[in-house]
Figure 1 (tube, rainbow over the protein chains, first blue to last red):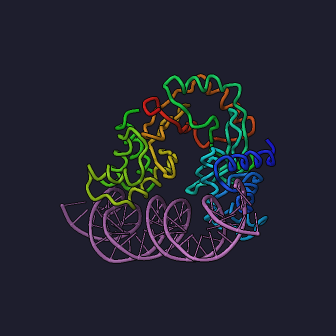
Figure 2: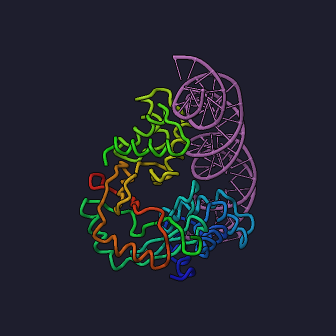
Figure 3: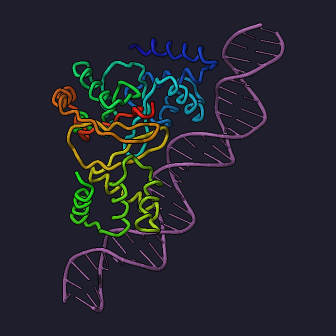
Length: 142
Length: 142
DNA sequence: TCGTTATTGATAATAATTCTCAATTATAAC
DNA sequence: GTTATAATTGAGAATTATTATCAATAACGA
């Protein structure tokens, strides 16, 4: 999905929830959508400031909270810090996250999605999302 | 694997790394091995104190750090807090963690392990571990 | 345009984790 | 068993990440 399309979806979600569309929010979401890798709150704030100077860290956290409630972002822990990345696509796949360079790669799992969900569903477990995060080392960093 | 066996493995790892076996460490590791669900650092400290009163939080964090370096524990984020659980078994399986009751269920994935690893390996990615964590809701909490 | 009300950025408060340090103690050598 | 050495301890301070507070601002429907 294209970033612009994702932005539209998010803005529509805002409108439908008594939440307002502000330049800060737009900048934060855009920065997150354009990032090629998970960002920390601080990094995201810095990126957002490139298009809308003065964005505060508090607004970043507040926007992330809204995105969370819409299930539009995911968090990963890399080392001892928490990073966040956009994830509006709910098709079955894995997010491969490199703990060295933080690069994110999507990995299609449609071939085994059925068996996978069956194994989990057998014990009556309901996953919060179809995507799974796998931390490791990418080919470039090995 | 039995908790006693796991404890032995951890103690052996300590001996081989210039790290000493102390009552506090033993209590912390034992508490973690016997827990049926992921614990926060504070919870683990409290549990460890049941067998060895006076264990400090700092020691808990230090022991967790050692366990991390041996890859004997895993972390999950539930809500906004980080929890930790013992995980010395490296066979292919999923850890199903309930975000409501924090209960942990193991789910065998041997049937799709091959295809799964193939899909990930195709892009040259090296997972840090064979186990994957899946957060969701268990049958009892739905 | 106006009024209502959500949002803002700055800063204070809180929570989680790491650091510091003197006292203690595990371990190996004798 | 004794001793020397060096890792470990718990308490509390320091740091870091996140959340709450607040007066000023701005989005948006009427």
